[in-house]
Image (cartoon, rainbow, N blue to C red; front, side, top):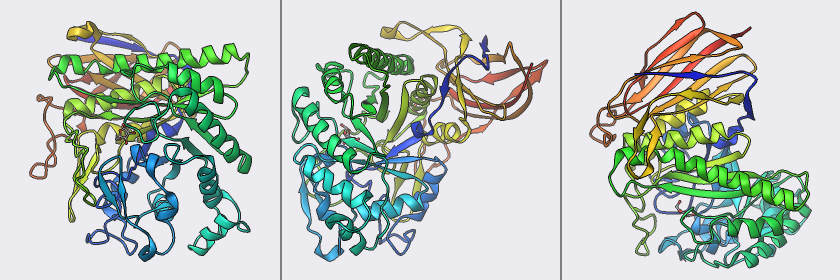
Length: 496
Ligand code: AHR
């Protein structure tokens, strides 16, 4: 089968914000304990941080890391996680019915971020706490010494402020499962009060208001609208969350997930334009898609009051990896709307990495993220795609290919393609009316014949990328796109 992708270097949606390649680490299951912090592991450094996990994460080039939750944050008292370890109390965690030992807290997270080459995106507790606690945490993290909480930070070993730039005003406050869940009107007031004080203490920070926790919520977009109308002047972003599911075990249907992801982004673009118009404002608010992934196989949320219980340890297969690639494709295409995004999560809990005390398993969904984070750079080109469609069941006819493309100031091109077809190889011709592709810099493909193929401890390389095929002729690249695949093509352009 043939398809064509026409790109124009002048037709773009703006620069891709590298923060769309963010991660998320929650005090949940074995994400923090045994995932990033495991003093008993032979892979831990003297501070207890898993170096093998850090090395694997560095390759994902995550510029930001959301922390400490998630549902966890809505009952969290950050003050219990600082100071001498032997004086920190253990507490039951309402969200995941686990025991939180508090041996890893704000200071450990900041140190870990440095080692992992990432920066913190902190969430505050707006469930059981409020503006006062949030202001104290902001003071602890960002203010120079000379005041109570800043001095406590210095006492705990960190004189210089951490300078955290990005702050989430709570988590999923629209969800009845959330500790301290309230209607939008009340959340908006809480968020605005906390946000105003935080920005009053440090006006360099940016704030993310909670939006909807999913499109299935009855308050979808309305919760977001009420919040945004009230908090318009204090916030820079509204958050969206989505977890993709294939409960019906229908690969053709599942692989059209990108169409729905794009719809969510469109919904928010419309909402932002509406509120901006109502307010006659020149300000822009953007989307922080700060929880996204595939998650449906392992929903066990009861930690049975254990420390570091095995929860949400999802296994990722090829079809899941192809859906993850479509999330990133959609974020890249809508660079004008999505400025921040976090894969949920990074290790052990719905994550591309799994650990035992001695081992590290890299899952299939790691690879599209790695390739895209490495090669996506510059402006997001608007793809004019001419490709066959296929029958995606209840989702109707869907394009067989899902594509995004970027070009940077060095004229380096990156094209990312998912082939949703389970049977058809597609020869995709990539061309520009205003440029020639003069060199192919690389082609990597993740593919297979079995959508359920997954890496395992016994067979850790069942789903890994290999070099793909492409040829250059007269300034046009034709790249072979196998069925059930993700492909990352890189090339050099010469402008005409
Ligand atoms: O990422 C797992 C959970 O999913 C988070 O704690 C919560 O925000 C969401 O519902």
